Length: 171
Image (tube, rainbow, N blue to C red):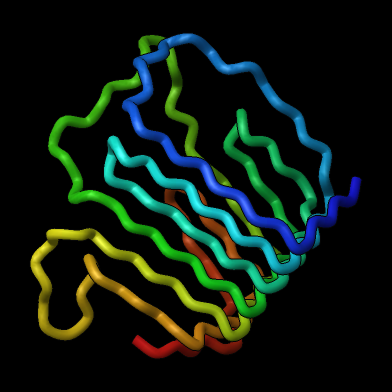
């Protein structure tokens, strides 16, 4: 029911495109209600697709109420992140969108979060080769000193809500 991990590092590097797969995945049910992480470093790089995701996690706590991924339903009581850096490097979007296998329904996501607290964190989002713009550049973002305190966050297909008590960052 509770899981803790500290002082760990890992990386996954994918060098080839994944073959097309129309089979149904097995349903995985993970019953973790509380997750505590500290000093975690992880990188996933897909060289074939030009993607790179990295996380340097100082400390975090997640208290889940219900996570049902096959039904696209996530209810979380609390997420706390401190001293965490996230980096996303993605290629420019391509026009050819892959279609879903026949018979696969597109379930809308419903995500709720009772309490969110981020302190002294950063997020970097970059699309290499995308033209730079003056002012806020959505293809090249670096938010540092990120701090957020929010309650009652909710996301669904036709509703987005949050009670934001504090939000600050530098760009």
